[in-house]
Length: 368
Picture (cartoon, rainbow, N blue to C red):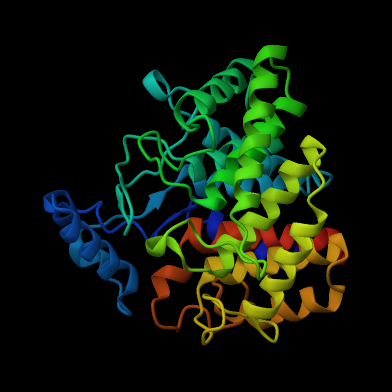
């Protein structure tokens, strides 16, 4: 497992963790002219879904995102007992910490590109909860945030990404997105329980985290699933967002001392029954398999977590990794760079970093 992780790391590191991103379609000259929502979404989706890479023709350059380096820093920190992995975690963590915002949104992180989704638009100038969580966790794991930066993060999380009931995707969004809400809850709980914050601030974080967990527990469906969010526009169930929900629910509840074993078991049962076809992950519940690097990597991470928690045996984790690893560049399979939509599989944020996280987690479950 370490050999696979090492090869993947070296492949991404040789490119300084820069590359394409599935949501970078608005970063080129044409993207800056797309001022209407429909134009923005159409251009972004065309770049994301095209079998051929449109980025060179559109003037879209490789990006190194803080989310990718933060995610990878946390993955490397898991192996800090090995000196070379410790050095890697520190280097990536320092890169990530250097991108922490100052000014109005001090302490938080952003994407380096504008994003238009079916439900929201958030420009690169504002922070978002997903970027903040992956970056903060990576820096905390690597030990690259000082006390002042941790305090700014804690205050920014409560001031800009929490609305009194749950954690919000961006400062201007009032939409409940379960995976983002639970990411915020887990981060708030971690800050409250494991960092040297003033008691009053820590108590506020813990209270906000507990309320956020309760909100998403109430959003679990009778079959054990969580939709992306409430309402008909957000009612889909997919693999990697479900994985985020389960991982962050477990993390937050453990830190807060909340008993969520029953909803976790119900959620894991749905995930394993409806979001896998044998060991191969499904993108959407109960549909034909659609390969996606982030969804596949998250499935490996989830298989490692499920084995660690006793929900599955270790054989399933091995089988899932074997089923998905053929398309990832850097792993020496010889097929990863010959597939359709090659750029998607070469994305540091969407491919290399999440699989590195899965491999280092799997190392703890399957040594050797």
